[in-house]
Image (tube, rainbow, N blue to C red; front, side, top):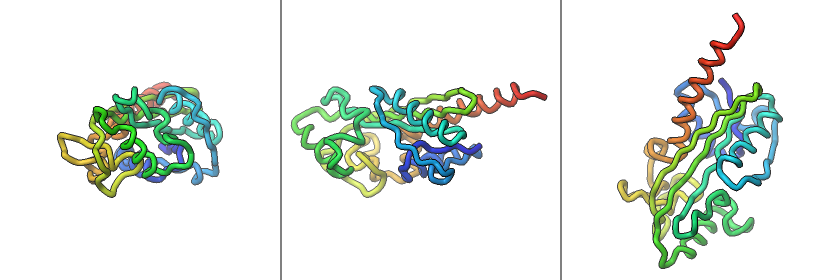
Length: 202
């Protein structure tokens, strides 16, 4: 099965390919199927934004489309940046600028946080699969590590004594919010595929 990723983030694509590739699912970028869709993320939850993106790319490509909406939720900030994680601090900031702003805003505050990921896949027949994963942790006092992307250098896992950016891709996929959501999605997709086979005309 081939799924179109409703994102232009190649690092996100690699994470999905590494997990879903084991079950024979190919995930490709929009550009590989001649589609270029930018979806305005107007939802107030990860579920809403994930569905908006998957549905738009499915309709544009005519193929099953998979979207991930994820973000960092910090308890001391009332769950912010949340669904606005990629836009935290405004359009002038890059990943480094965003996590530096986060560290500044957390001075003197409790550091508990969690990463959340919601995976949605929309199919041309109208069916939808949704899966959610969460990974608890804390916010480090300074960035550490060169791997990952986004807030990974400041998301610290006390039990591993490492940030996401210090983990190998295999270690990150094993415990990350996206890894958890993708494994749940994988099980749901297996059920969807077998159900479709049973419903197919003989």
